[in-house]
Length: 149
Image 1 (cartoon, rainbow, N blue to C red):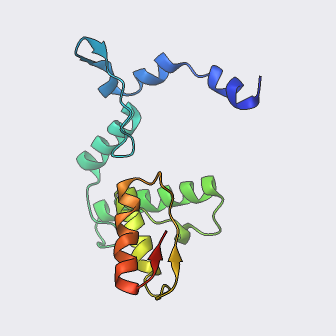
Image 2: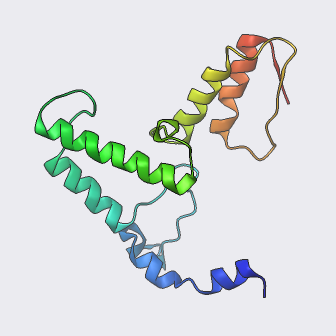
């Protein structure tokens, strides 16, 4: 058995499902199975609890205030960047940018590339792309005269 199959075989799917409250419901008499993660991913209880705790105790703009709530929110934000940096083995936490989701992130990347793309350039995407990864490149190509393939 290859390593990937062995790793999958060790997951306790029912235990993992218990971490996601939304999956504890039935739809049309059957246990909910949610597969639309390209649109939004369901959150485990630990994430929900952390979000609730933040809004109840630390809700403030980051890098914008000198009051306690802002300082705590900024510290949490920067600690999260450091955690992601270590996980991805990035050179600096400054390489880590948080967005609200993949759609916003792709739009930021496409807009950032706009200065580097010109008429005659080719932008390559696959036939399997989610709609959110097609439109920004279509718009970029229309704006710059590049060709989308």
